[in-house]
Length: 51
Image 1 (cartoon, rainbow, N blue to C red):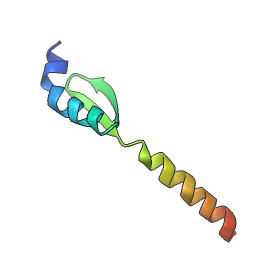
Image 2 (image 1 turned 180 degrees about the vertical axis):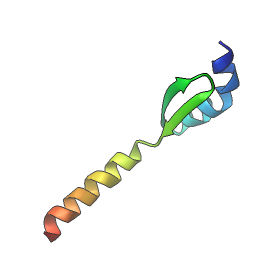
Image 3 (image 1 turned 45 degrees about the vertical axis):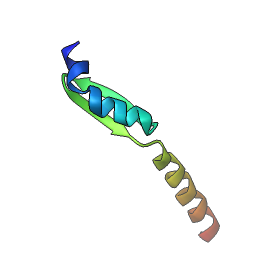
Image 4 (image 1 turned 90 degrees about the vertical axis):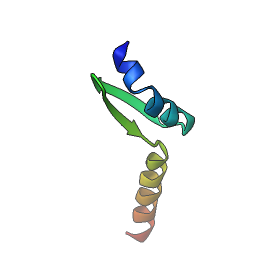
């Protein structure tokens, strides 16, 4: 309960941005923007065409 209260503002902001939130311990979070998956896929497609 205290963990969620401590990080409520940051978690709310991340959810608004549609990021993923992974809780890794008390007060510890990993925030990730899923758009980076798209960047990785485009890079791989680009390498396939230039090889």
